[in-house]
Length: 263
Image (tube, rainbow, N blue to C red; front, side, top):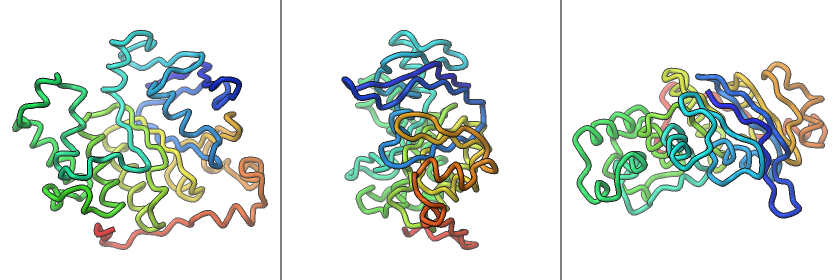
């Protein structure tokens, strides 16, 4: 689905991401692990070319090598991005924020007009998929963190993406809500065959949901394998700590039979 060939990112003399090659399959669910400053966010932003890479190239199925402004727009249309801090417009309703996922598909003039019945129908369907249809007309600023993140997922779904990138989407949530949001995101990407890359700090969430784990430290990939291969030796190398300390990372909390959406 997506291939990053020797992509690197430098800021002056500082290397944020060493030359990295990654092939991502359709429908795969990949988790990026690593300590703060390891290069996870840089890699995610580079995969979407949200900022230019210093070297290397991105190639996407149906687009080819992204080497022009036209192809870059196509990549951004194919890619849903979920942010740690939600990036919602707090004064707008959950419905309006979800509709914003279609901005890249319309002209500026179109954005001044009321939403079409088709877009409204799709937006309500996206909110329903994340369990937020009952909050469609609630201002985003009046929603909890977990609810805002669900709206962020709904907004990304409005793009009908083939690729989903999520940058620490549950970093601000408690373990119960974190599990519920990742479980939701994983289920959606599975059912729709979306190629997904999610950066996390929670090792146990990575082990629970990832098909593949890519671990970074100091801007370099230090591990690329399955959850079963992510042993204490790898974690020690990744976090430069003892396995006992590594186990202090937030645990997975299995959701209740009726997940609460109030948080």
